Image 1 (cartoon, rainbow over the protein chains, first blue to last red):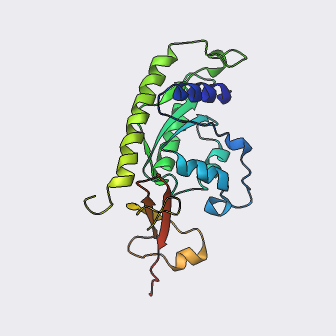
Image 2 (cartoon, each protein chain N blue to C red):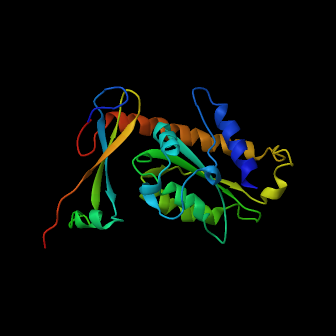
Image 3 (cartoon, each protein chain N blue to C red):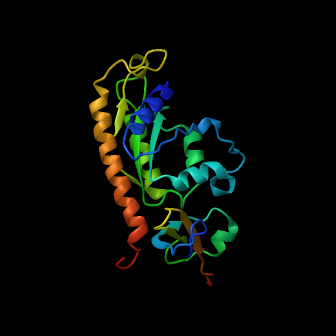
Length: 172
Length: 60
């Protein structure tokens, strides 16, 4: 049920002038599972991460945590993430809207060098938020998405400037 | 470091501590930092990201 939320986020991001976005489905990446980390990185996914100024992670919650496949895919890169912005969209069938998956993802993303924004999205009772075609049935989510993306774009732009112009350990 | 994509001089934007996952990395980790430093660079021209490991053989 996360696909509809992910497609909604992609569509809302794409409306922003000057922003290019693409949707990556981690389930379709050709990443082996008999090893982990950068030794199994997929070149195409790594290039996508290298180009990106920001990530929006749409994550369903399983047993209060994140899907193992999501962690496996995230672990395949490092330099590509450092000092880049990330926002998290939690999805669940229950009333908490993935609040616990967000809390559990934050320390992982921090260790990967990503910079989390302070707005989250929570798709509570996601089964009732979209119709079968993926159309959002509850437009009260849209103002929150706008705030989430305002903050994400600010952080992405600021960090892009920093990555290019501010040197670590000294004045840039 | 020179950008392999556009040739511009890249900015040293981060020193990321990486925790060893192989015997080779563990053997070269910096004891004081309990890991290996990965220097991360960004290109001011095209935005490309590159990195390189800084290793120090620890003698005990």
